[in-house]
Amino acid sequence: MDYSTHELLAVGIAAFFVGFLKTTFSSGIGIFLVPIMIMFWPTRFIIGIIAVLMWVTDFFAIPMFWKQWESRYLRYLVPGFYIGIIIGVYALVNLPDYWLRKGIGVTCVFFAGLFIWRQFQGEIKPPPVSPQAGVGIGIGGGIISAMFHSGGLVLSLFFVSQGMSKTAIVASILIVWFCVNPFKVGSLWYGGVVQTPMLVAGALAFPLAWAGSWCGRQALRKIPQRGFTFILLLLSLITALRLLLETN
Image 1 (tube, rainbow, N blue to C red):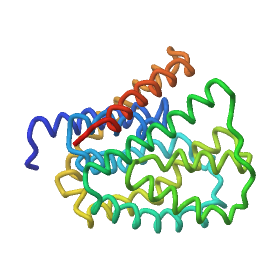
Image 2: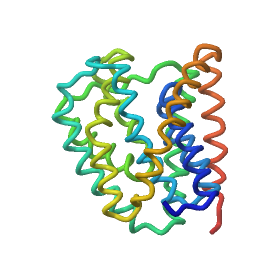
Image 3: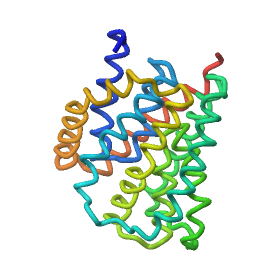
């Protein structure tokens, strides 16, 4: 593994905060961690290493919600995600870095604004859609997931429209990730975004991810969820606006 100290620092930070955010504000990986880290490290490097770490952390997140998911949606969502991931990886590989960063900024502003609205106006209730619509939802979620790691936000809106409980929503998102993350990492590897040293670094960083998860659970008990989420979203918006204002 031939990474500089600067790159190894990125792996350590990403590992800790992927674990931390999965147990506090699960949607924060795409709209908080990614835009902040690409301010200091190359965009595709951060997309790649976070993809690997999200896959690694699935293995200790799934047991926390074992069999609490709604498996009947998987046959619609998972194939759609596979298609969307292929499209998203193709775009990720071929888009100029300038437009990729703008896309991350726009996605972050949209979803962070949506969550802030939910904090003040109450839960957003999307109109009911058929389970079969999950194929289209999966395609859209797969594209956003591959490019920006924000597919969970699309999934959460779909599951809310199905009238599912919060626990079932979290569990169902996790089982979708468990099914599609190996394909996502493999697609990113084929596209050259994920490289073999990232896989090694991700495996070695597992203890940091576990430590982040443990710290996240402790923080969640001590910090009011509403205030914590609002602070993260505000920081996300500031970072996203900075990305959008970049001129080169």
